[in-house]
Picture: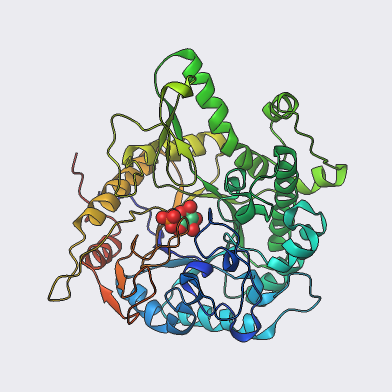
Length: 467
Ligand code: BG6
């Protein structure tokens, strides 16, 4: 793989505030939607009472242990770390006029720690959480006023960190609101499609406002969107399967189309009409949407298949989406189908469509690890997964795709988003904590830690084409 990765390729890892920080009420933090879903993003909404606890309340205690963790990332040679700011640390209820200084100060300390090692932050403004206050009093993203609250939050953090953070993302996996509306837009799970698309529209307008604010405030700042790269293949070459696949891929590409091109794609008119979906879009909104992102970022874990005859096949839940399994691929312990070539394909699809730089901001294998008697962890399955995906990234770069960087998901074990499990581990660094919350929280290097360090140090030359 020698020479395929550009010289300034941003190697690193990605985490999210609600899955690592814990300290869910520290220093004036307000309750977020994530705090109300102790069982994960598809779990029931659970009102908080004093003393009850979910695994995320402590998570891996990154809020207090970040210096140790950043030092370990630096030891692997990270150039970049993706994390998110918890909106509720900055605006605890969401609608305050002035921010919470203690929350702002935490991220100052975190970014300063990263700067010590030359690790660049890549910061998501909202990763699967929003202030619960906005849900309770305004109905979340269903209400237009949430756009203004988000813009105030975005401008506040751009002003505060403009000399420390140059790469930003707006909403994590913005397309997932179609499947988990409470997590994505703060709406009840059973909301109808008109309500969901209206809330999504507000979020797209808010995203464009954040892009504009970033361009105004952050010198040399670059801001991208973030898509769940749920690439789908036709199950067969039957024309009906192909057409249905195109339709379903547009479910998620729609978000990229608006954010990268600056307007609603033509195909949405028919989709809205035939599905009885009404979305109020003002002329001012249309103007706002014209402010487009600088780069496209996405997560990629798996691909899936589509058929025009769904009643004849069983679907399986993958990463957020339900998909028909591909008979040519094997799955992970959680049934997510492993498809490294799909990553090369997806990179090419996105680059052909948008001609903007791409950033792979999540990719990884959730697996159960065994700690040996001597404390070592031999996670060759993880090494193989990551190696094979990175080989395909190199191929895509060779195809001519402009790739800015790669941040593997969960470089340190964290709480999983879908089911709030600790046992689904992604890390190069093991964290001693189980699903019930027992454990010392001690950190331990896995075999993959040394493997990834070598990949970064050799700028990808140590990767092995195992085909
Ligand atoms: C992505 C999310 O969908 O997938 C992450 O952006 C999440 O927050 C990751 O953790 C992996 O999913 P899970 O359910 O295995 O944690």
